[in-house]
Image 1: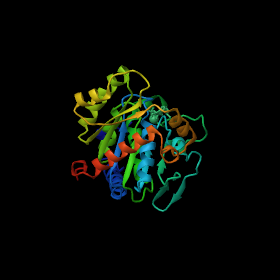
Image 2 (image 1 turned 180 degrees about the horizontal axis):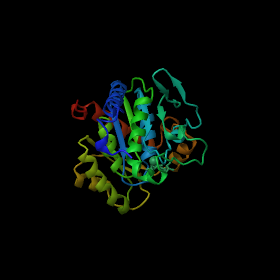
Image 3 (image 1 turned 90 degrees about the horizontal axis):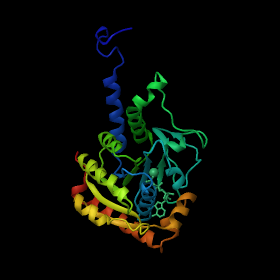
Image 4 (image 1 turned 180 degrees about the vertical axis):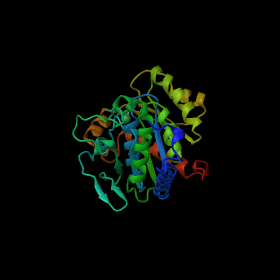
Length: 289
Ligand SMILES: Nc1ncnc2c1ncn2[C@@H]1O[C@H](COP(=O)(O)OP(=O)(O)O)[C@@H](O)[C@H]1O
Ligand SMILES: [Mg+2]
């Protein structure tokens, strides 16, 4: 077996060149994306994906060109929630054509690549037992490829639906400039316990934390999200009430904000979308170049 010291340079693999080429492709792709917004929560099941999809639809209704990248590689739900599940991915010049939902939202998700309903995502490693060791870097590569290889076209905003846990945010922030982070909680002590740490981690990425959304408001007599936001020094963007109709629409892949504009939950979502849009348009949210 060769050791490092036996190999001259990088052994002819030109790793530095490959990485630079990948980065250049990513930069070029993102040059036509106005702003990238990450929706995060340390907690699972709080509605990150539902919020991402609904905000995407709000922006689309307001005339923005919108993309959604499902960065939850192990639990991808955006294709389902945005109603593009089962669409075939078309290859076109320069990349993969993302399916488009009824409001024109472009969607890319691991779900569109996995065969069948029961196939979990697995990573190939030279030795399968080592796959878990490489998982972090393979996930980062997969997200980079999704970002770079999708024909997003010109977008006003690209929303990233992140998996639960906050470590992935730092990875993504190192790949692409994040113009804003939206943190999601539900009104429970358990959620606040985790989300408080998420806010700290979000702030450490240096990307602007646009604020906190309390989702499923009114479902439990839990702690006040306004207090959590104030303690953390971030804005409370709004509260989305618990609304069974929202969950039904998500399961059906319907654009709830378009079909049920009169519901309190939709009014709340549209107000939150307005605040996010205003924040993205403000100079402070411009990503550093
Ligand atoms: N405000 C809400 N009212 C009712 N159901 C909701 C609400 N927000 C999310 N849900 C539902 O709760 C479940 C979990 O939401 P999801 O977006 O998948 O969470 P996460 O992405 O944080 O894991 C889904 O079935 C979703 O449709
Ligand atoms: Mg999710």
